[in-house]
Length: 138
Image (cartoon, rainbow, N blue to C red; front, side):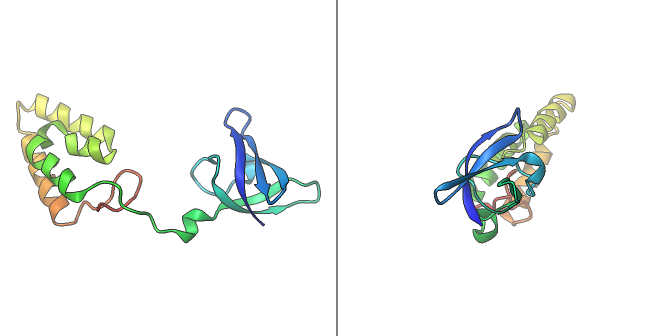
């Protein structure tokens, strides 16, 4: 069956899937994807004899290719001019690497600039081509 998640409570790890006019309860144990369920996610599922949704999988993630949200040119420019502070990594969502770049620049009295320059080249040549959520850069 196909439906959408109407509600989900992270504490109880349970929720409701609505398909047409019928609602089916589900438990996180029956959730297949690695990401958490979210309200309005479209899902495919089976229903057991007691009316509980089982074998729940995302539908939208299978049908649609991820669209780019972040710009390659902005990320590259940030890496080139502010790479010593890891600003481009924060822009792309890689917060731990951004903090590591700040720490390296502080610990080496400025030599972290090289890291930012190298990553600017990697971004512009397409070797760094995804953000932290796995979406391609525009």
